Image 1 (cartoon, one colour):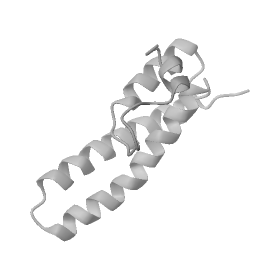
Image 2 (cartoon, one colour; image 1 turned 180 degrees about the horizontal axis):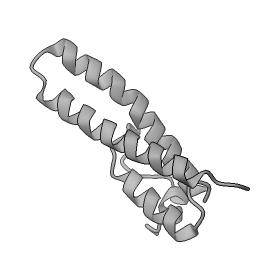
Image 3 (tube, rainbow, N blue to C red; image 1 turned 120 degrees about the horizontal axis):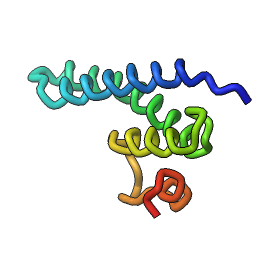
Image 4 (cartoon, rainbow, N blue to C red; image 1 turned 45 degrees about the vertical axis):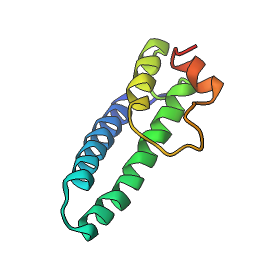
Length: 98
């Protein structure tokens, strides 16, 4: 299978930078409408980051296993909503947190 590594790295960089900027904006904006707009936009970038993390868990984000583990660890730093505070066991195993 041909993995589009350059495109995936570009998506990762743009989505991570956008998410960080939107989180900062949502936490520093004075107007409620701006906080809401930033939160709404973040929902799209966060979903992209989750999708990329999902691909790294399956080893399809980047060509090497080691690169996928490090990308997964980086992507895990971004917040996402979960019912409990734990990742599923397969995610912990795939990104090296066993």
